[in-house]
Length: 332
Image (tube, one colour):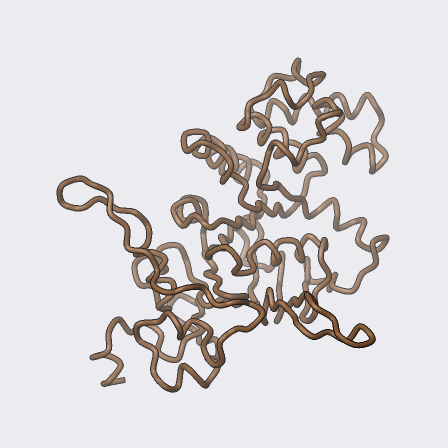
């Protein structure tokens, strides 16, 4: 894995107008993303985790340039691709691909597998012979028989359909694949197979993966580093080991504590987050997590925390990173 940045995101923001007033002026806005920054190296898997509505999918779609940012910059291999037109983006469409959540709706039911996997190749001028050969190779890479390429998607299981989606994403030899909840619609046993397949493909082709999921267990299994998102902000970024051994942000600790784990009698127990997720149309002032944080003090309710560097080169957006209880807070 190279340390040179393949992808760099700087202060990325996105707002959606949900209500307009007189003469079309915005009256209400949904703040989906707020000043998100990070880098990714070649060959790295960066996991993005958080509750529904935290901005994970919006982030992925902006990196894919399916959504236009409201602010900030996206640099790929050192070049700013934020303001490029669709025509100027064409070379980057080869380099940045996606695997989406639902294998049942992400594939065209009227196209056979050869056409589905081969469509990106056709769009970039490959011949029919080359497409057929390449589709056969890709099907073998993802664990499907090439003699299945003339079948329609309904002939395949959910796991097989996701393998088809992965083969399509690999067709143009990308550098980065954005996996948006790529296993959440699958049974647990099939999830493990797909995750192992992605890990094998990453090693074989040297890919970088941006892996988006609400499932912290899945994120831990696949990621080198993990970005924790809350209400449109990245509140912590750390290596997988550092995040689970010494989480610095109270939200990260709450997410980890919410993962079901066995009690002493072997039963499963779960400690969910407390409180309701605030509306992104009306986020709390100060630290947006203060309404659910057990350590919140007056400063947290009024002052926006700046991102602070933490052990191992990570980041935490918290006034008191690493504190576990109020006794530590009083002595800080």
